[in-house]
Image (cartoon, rainbow, N blue to C red; front, side, top):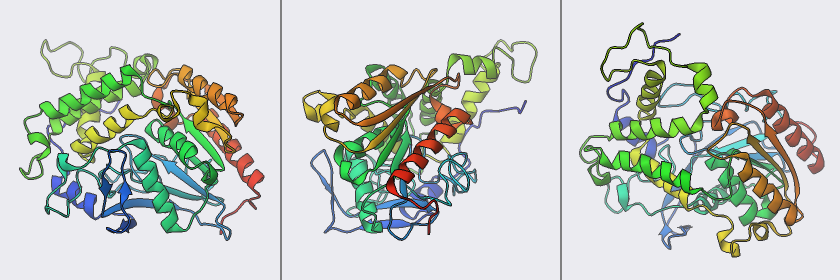
Length: 400
C-alpha cells in the first residue's frame, strides 16, 4: 500500500492561489458595472467574472449543451489537468469521447461558482475598491446566486436552452435551482446525491468546519492574504471532518480497517498509527494546496441556506408546478450525508407537480462520493438518460 504521510504545510504558495483567483487558467466571462449580479442578500455585485471550461463542440442549432454544476470542494476543471495540483480532472471518468457525457455528442460547460477560488469572483479575488483580497468583505452568496451567474454566462455564450443540467451534492442543489428558476431553459435535469434543503446535521458538520478554520491563528479574521499566511491547519481539519461524511463506514472498513500505518505496534503517541489517520491527514494537507479558506466558509454557508421550498410557503411541489423538464433523480444506498429518503421526497414532490421523473437508488458501499467514483450502474443510468433526452430533442448524435 502507498504510504501516506502528513504534510506540515501546503507546497503551493498563497501567491499561486491568489493569481488563479484573479487570472485563472481557463476562459473568463467578465461583467462590468452595467451588468451587476443581483444577490439574495440585497447587494448588486459588480464588476465580477465567471471562469469556466468547455469540452466538445456546440452544434449548429445550439441544442446539445450540457451544464455540469460542481460540488463544494471542486471547480470548473472537470476533464482537464488542474492548474494548481497537476492532477487529472475530477470527472474524467464521466466526461470525454465515448463516456456518459460524450464530448463527441455534447457540448459540456462547467463554471467555477460565484464565491469560489478558481477564477470566479469570490473572497479570494481582488476587491476593485481596495486593491486587496475581498476576504470577509465579500457579500454572502446563495445557491440561487450561483445559478443566476451561470445563467448570465450562458447568455454570454449565446446558449438559450440546455439539453441537460447535471451535478452531485452542492452541484445537485444547483441543478434543482436551475429547474425551479429557469424551467424553460432546462430540457432535462440529473440531480445526484443531493437534497432540496440542507438538514440540521449537515449544517452542524459545516459549522464544525467553519469553526476549525476561524480558530486557526493564521486566519486573521479572513485577512490572511495581507499577512502572507494561510490557515492551512484549520482548513485541513475542516476537510478531514468533511471527508469523513463523504464516505461510509463499510468503505472505510474495507479500505483501512484497523490496519497500522508502516508499523506493527502502536507508538503510544499521537502520531498517525492507523492507516485511516494517515489517509485523513493526507486529504487535509492536499486540499489546502488548491482551496481558499474563506471560499470554504462562503460555499458551506450557501449550502446551509438552501431550501427550494422556502419561496413556496414550504410546499415543495409548488416549486416545480407545471414544469416540462425531464428528471432523473439518483441516490446511493450508503450515502448518509444525503440519504435516499431526501431523494424520495424530491421524487414525490415532482410526481405531485406532474413532472416527468425517473428515480434510481444505486446499491453501493462507497458513500456520498460514489458519484465521483467508478460505479458502472451510475454510468449506465446517466448515459441512457442523456441519450433519451437527446433523442427526444432531436439530436443527430454528434456535435458540430
